[in-house]
Image (cartoon, rainbow, N blue to C red; front, side, top):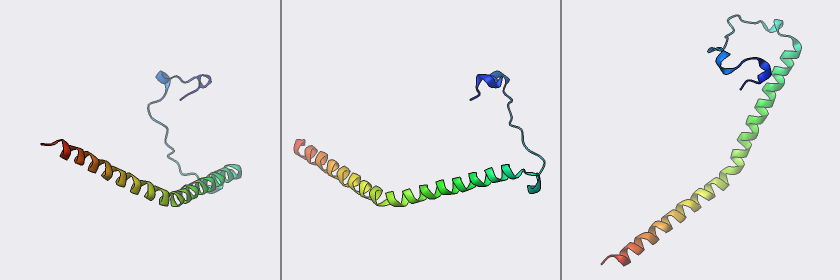
Length: 89
């Protein structure tokens, strides 16, 4: 979404995003930008590691919930079948 201060409204927005065609050498990237990119890469790695850790921690609980859901579902099906058997002549 563009902000009104940008001066671009949906009817004025370009259809295609510009693509960099020239390769920029690492030496041409300002150190401040390199540091920001490296910090962002570390932040992403830490975030993904946290997600992996959370999934490992949640796995036993997810297995327990899945088992409980299957048991309850089978129990409900059995109850419905029993009711149908009693109602049948």
